[in-house]
Length: 228
Image (tube, rainbow, N blue to C red; front, side):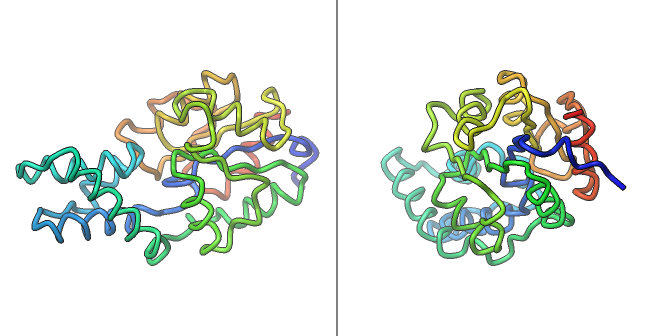
């Protein structure tokens, strides 16, 4: 039987998109809804998925630039606002938790760990997505880029997320999928677990995590190993 004592009082911070949730289909569909309405070429899911960690604004700009049609900065801002409106309504059409995530969160929370979402998504959108996927109650807080002094990869984001739930950085783990998560964890001095199925341009294995996971079934054991 696994000894869960090491988890009590620990803080596990999770990235959201590409780590806990496969959200790329809805995110890219919302980008494409805006592009197509402007008679611009849509992005393919396969092509755009690795770049989701750069954020929706970057993806939209990429889509505009790829179409080689001049669009003013003011118009781009209008299009991004239109994206936000569309995405907020269609945020959980095809998005879903990665396999094993719910079971792992259940074990961690029941063992007494503090769970916090540390995401570069706006807090309201993150809360909406997790609510619609019936995951929000697992977390003691959701800390998006709009409620911190600096967003990932700046360590301030992770530090402030851990502080929000009353955690100790020495007993904290960042669970993510990309260089933004690795940078925040290394800067904050926390343990780092990366998944190899998320949204990243650089393979997660090359980001030197303490532990690399291919399935959430292994997350609890990985956390215990780092916290002992």
